[in-house]
Amino acid sequence: MPVVELKYGSSYVEVNIPESSLYAVLNPEDLPGAKDPLQKVKDAIKNPIGSIPLKEMAGGKKNIAILASDISRPSPSHVLVPPIIEELRGAGVSYDDITVVFGLGYHRKHTEEEKKKLVGEEVYSRVKCIDHDINDCVFMGTTTRGTPVEVFRPVAEADLVIATGNLEFHYKAGYSGGDKALLPGVCSKRSIEANHIMMIRPGTMPGKADGNPMREDIEEAGRIANVKFIVNAVLNSRKEIVEVVAGDPIKAHREGTKYIDRMYKRNIKEKVDIVVASCGGFPKDINLYQAQKGLENASYAVKDGGSIILLAECREGLGETTFKEWMLKARSPHDPVQWIQKEFKLGAHKAAVICMVLERVKVYLVSSLDRNLVKDIFLIPVEAAQDALNMALKEYGENAKVLVLPYANSTLPYVEAMI
Image 1 (cartoon, rainbow, N blue to C red):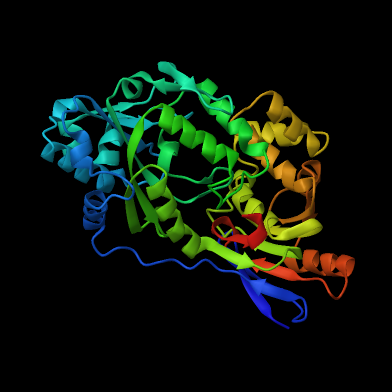
Image 2 (tube, one colour):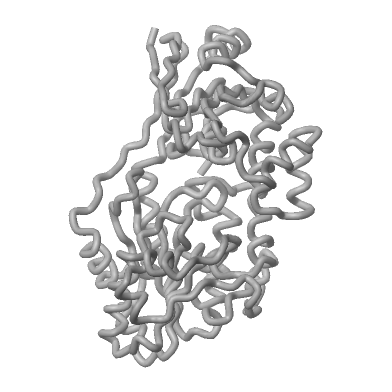
């Protein structure tokens, strides 16, 4: 009988799976980090995808905004931004005409030390580096899906907007990167909420860009707001730069997603009865809010009416405050799904997406959480993954198919027809 070892908190657990039931064990496969990441960035800028060169684009421009991620994101702005500025300088742009804008979305403002750390001392000392202000936004138009595009004033007033960021799966918008630096990065609360509400629409899922209403709305906002050029880093799980893409905000973005797919997307021919999913241990399973990523990915591999066995220690409980409030006040999994449609709240949105999974499958949770708490949030508490598997196998019979995700937070199983 095959034995699978899975991370749980800071330790490992073993699960015995009958050979006749084991459908597959899916693992991510990191690409190696680049030997010279800075050169990767320079080469990408010099060889843009679907776009004229940046130097040509910047000629004669007097007010250029470079969008950079905030400190909560892994984007290596200190590597991405300096070569962009170098290229702009080569086009005759003065330092005074360049502003780096940190896209905060809903997040807190940075300290000056954090800004310096994000872009590096040299950039910080030579160009203006400012935080996005969610309350100082200018209306620029409305997307066909009805999202008002209200953009931070210095970005709206720029005559060239360059977006930077990193590429990874996004649990509803398909992927990060590209025009996401604009929306939600540097938009108003109204714009962010209007776009985020789309996460409950069909077609929103990780690993899908084209035909994903949330991603397509973001990209339409990017065109309205005049984002002309992107520089995106593809990172592996060690946060090393694997590849860099630059150029047209959509064409270059799609080229970059191919590397993410190669590392983390895994094709399966059919959905299975049972998915055993480990988030990947601490800190990925530090709380249920973080563990949601693993649950979401596992949900794409399980049949309606099937079971997910989620290994997530949750040593810090449920996590984010609003998420916790919504999970605890819900009377049924359908409640948060309804509430989010009436009023979008950051944090609570993850309660809604967890409950969308709970509406169609059973979820056994192996964790350190109190059993009654687990029951209160509509999951089934179990002491050990083996116990849950034995229960599920008994329910689905000897022909049940079991899929294992040892690193569910970063592995996306998909059936070809889904994408």
